[in-house]
Amino acid sequence: MVLRGNDKDAHNNIFACSECQDCCPANAKNKNNIEIGVTFTEEETLELLNHKGNETYSASLAAKIETMGITPEKINPCIMPRNLAFFLKKTHEEAL
Image (cartoon, rainbow, N blue to C red; front, side, top):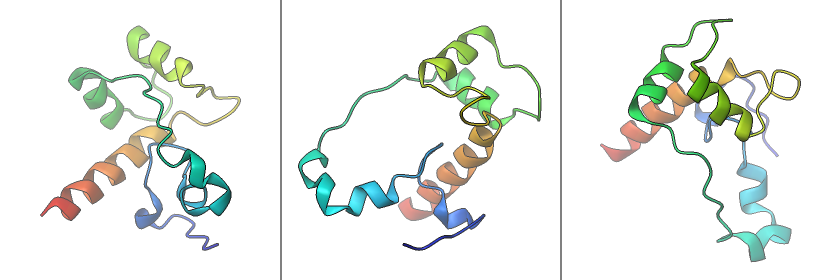
């Protein structure tokens, strides 16, 4: 296992890296078991990208984040804007 710390290349998801699960032989049978989660509107995506510190999210976005199981007790929701920005940038660069 490679620990990357704050390396921006380590951001493959908005939260909860799945790199280990993706390559684990024990998960081979689950490789195509994909669950469709919540869908963010363009406005909600922009709200996430522009989120600052301890600002509160809009009611609709907060409800979706909670549906995903992301609560301050489990995962700091403030990491989502950072990870989303890295993920979008990485995806855009790979597409070029």
